[in-house]
Image 1: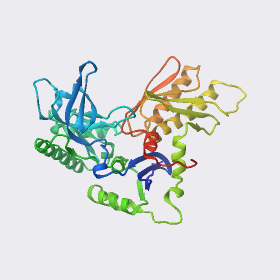
Image 2: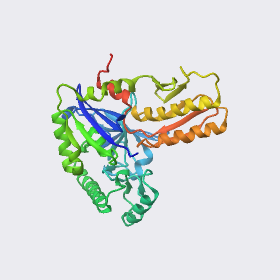
Image 3: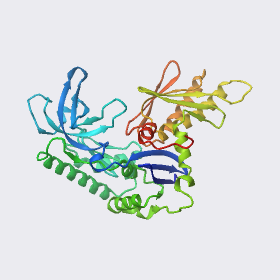
Image 4: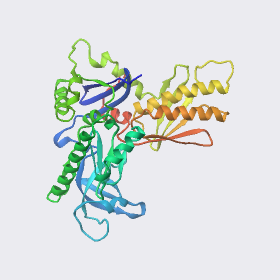
Length: 407
């Protein structure tokens, strides 16, 4: 059955909440700040002229200031590809150097944001990146489509930047994708040209608000409706679609029912509340315990109220398969990232374990963010890594002060 996608957007307590539904099930929740102007916080994707404040060679890092007192972590290995606007010495990187950097990872608790010399410009169908000069394609595209794109784009290969074709390009005419790539290349060339005339700490390009980026990144396949409750927000989304995604204008709808709010209609408050709870119940009576820590996230599978006369391998596998499907869903819903350990109920049968791992990989593939099942430890802990794109939901909600139902 084809996946039908729907997006809900609403304002709550100075934040914008975005919900992605697939076949009427909420699968992603995003929370974004409404900060603007002088109060605006640095966002993932912002491009600055930064100044090197300190170099810590023994950990292969430097700290680059992008605004008064705001220092960011920088990997020294990227200095070879850096574009400098002011160079102090002959070494690859010197204290006082000024260079173009992009925020590649948001601040997490006590950790500073990370900046990179790998400058990326993300379109709807393609990404232009200066950190890798290869022509690449999304692994979610069919093999025949990937090979066709690589062949058609081979003439664009150069030593300055690379191109990555996104999943949304699957059913798009090649000319439209090529046109977008040329626009991204023009933006990069213009940014480099003007950067040398800008002062240190200038924001050369502000990233789109994350709730707009969410609209750009969502899979185009099956997108049926974008429902916005707030009039001002609706007008902003309408202007964005008109400029960048005119084909989606007909899917945009302003929700104006004063008797029944959008959050009540789709039970979004309850969805947020459940996505912040430590315990997640399974239909079988088993449950997951999800505990994020500073270093990693642990997901513990328990048989709970599951009733069976005997604890057989078949019983354990049944609970584990249900838990694997729910764990994959919760990882995406809560936007968990980094290292994730899943402690399934022990299986003594190797065939049963392989069945579980095969199905778990299949469930994880539904996540649009790169998620990899790495290995199983001797203690039968399943190791997963998920690429960090933004802060997890629990941090966003906590920082935003959005109230939860029942509190």
